[in-house]
Amino acid sequence: MKYLLWLLKAAIFFTLFAFALNNQQDATVHFFFGTQWRAPLVLVVLTAFSAGLAVGVLGMVPRWWRHRTAARRAHAAVAAPTPVASSAAAGSMPPRPATTARPAFRPWNLT
Image: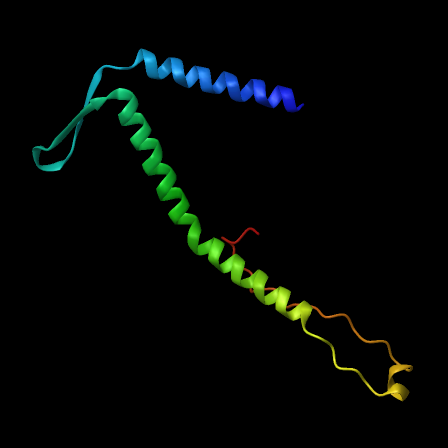
């Protein structure tokens, strides 16, 4: 399976490399107010891909931060020591396991 994945990665790399070699012509990107950018088509595609990747990562940061904070709180709640009861009361009732409260349901939060 490991070799199959490496073969797939190599095929994707060589396909993209062939795309880069076949598209070396200049492309013109027109911006607002008559400004334009002339660059090889591969560079334009790479820039658009990088910009989309950056926007996607920046869009995930707030949810990642909330998830990380909730995980840290849950870990602190589990790691907190439970108080030890007196020996007479300890034998009569076992201690309850620590639980964490779930956050309120939000339809857009699918985790």
